Image (cartoon, rainbow, N blue to C red; front, side, top):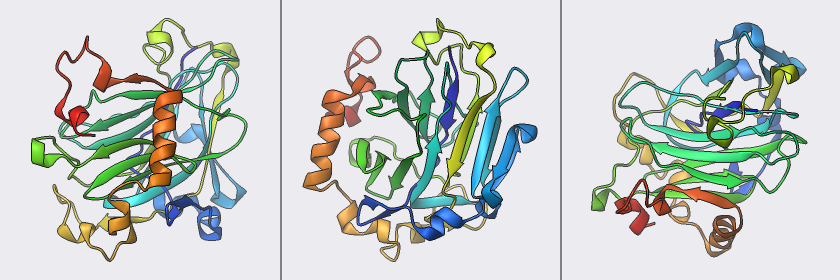
Length: 286
């Protein structure tokens, strides 16, 4: 069946010296301090005094939320527990000429693993999909999903494991995200493409599908007014995630990253010669 859960990660995550931590501050913060529900209002349930949010999806609607502010850099975080049983589809989208960093959780028939798809949009141009099979059951418990974003690199992480790196390669003509972004999460029906290329449809007898979210603190450089480009102060070393140690993966992180690519990745746009007979330039300079 197909369901789409895009935690449109126009960022996330909390780390300390590149180790994930769930601080008391992060665990206790109320959802509505930093986020607003944007659609499917009657399909959103606040639990535990707002420290946990549940999105549900049935035939009538899914639901979504976004951060109150936009950000220009950061290390962003959220804990997510995915819907169980027969599932398929998580997606979120923006208008044209936007920048966007996506985690897309593609549901599956019962007993088969979830696929986690990531994508990078710059100026509205995406088509940079990578897909991995998760090495755990994301429906059994909460896991940390996050993104480090600074002027040098974007790192997608699952728990303490880097699963994708997108470097700043402007020097070879590759666009790099430079517009303020928001954190968004949504749960909606993606049966037209999410599972087995759209051949496996949503089985609504399993509805409602429910996704749980925790950890609503935000570690980012806020954009206080409506600017089209990120102000230079968001790249300042006064923000710890811009420090030199976060410009590249260290040796330990690099080994984990390479293991994910070798063991769990089953699609990479960089190696899809039917789409790109000549690989995009960033694929030649990872």
